[in-house]
Image (cartoon, rainbow, N blue to C red):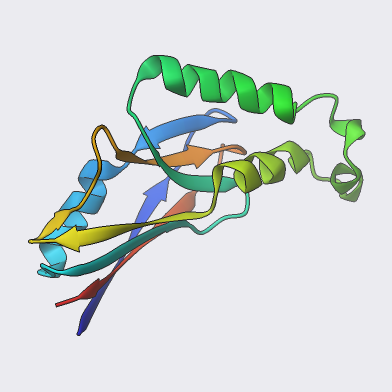
Length: 139
């Protein structure tokens, strides 16, 4: 069995944003040379997420709106976490809801997706460099 590791780096200028990273993960899979196995993609920061869904602008807008209703950024004094001097408690909650990682089967050298599935990086406390990890194992 072989393994391959690659980091993707992001600097989302806004507080929140979604990036379709499927092409980056597919390139990493080709670089790995692995034809059968598993591909893990995870956010390496506790205020960011990796998830799978449809790449449809309306859906991404709906996520943005729903997450902000679920865990609004302001007022920042509503969260005990922010009493430490932070202002990102909402980002931690949004990450918990959207998830840390995804695992996709690799079959015949391709990501084995269902219809419309794409991999996204979700940022909930942007403005600085963050990363996601791609780890592929198999043969």
